[in-house]
Image 1 (cartoon, helix red, strand yellow):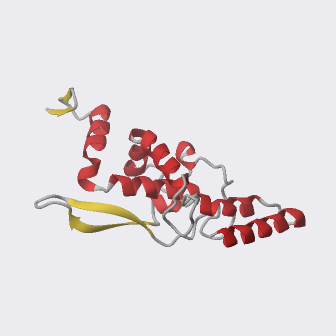
Image 2 (spheres, one colour):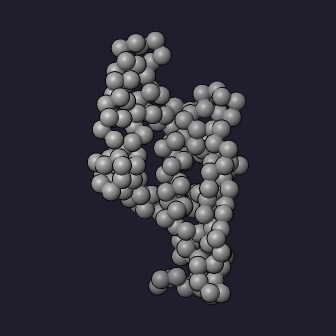
Image 3 (cartoon, helix red, strand yellow):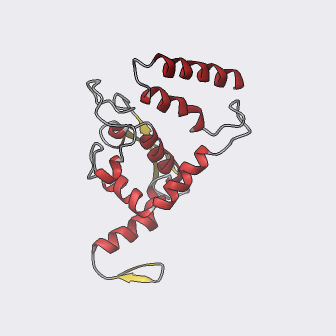
Length: 178
């Protein structure tokens, strides 16, 4: 038998595995790093980066006698911003690949459990990354605010000169503000 919180599990059930994941994730992965990595794959539409384009790195145990702590790192990055690995646009910017299971290795235990068990933490991480950071050269802008122009360029109609000129002007102003 195993107890997590005030619940005791006697059998290897779905509920037990979910509780085990939630309670033991930090024994094997840097949770905060995983949350940021997950958010970045969402924002950049880098869905292969949760599968074949994800590598894991470790710098050893964080405490004497402990397990190695693993960190997901980006690799390859050929599928992002809605294109597949042949360069063909495959996703709309508003795609919810996690809910629709359209990301590479959609059956991943790590990413599906992270999404299911730490959804509020994912939302909090996203919000924190969007908030203002005053201690960087991008004063007044959160890390994700500095890439908002990517979405605007991505959504611009290619033959709409006025929209494109507007994006260029906005990008110039943002560069000056930095």
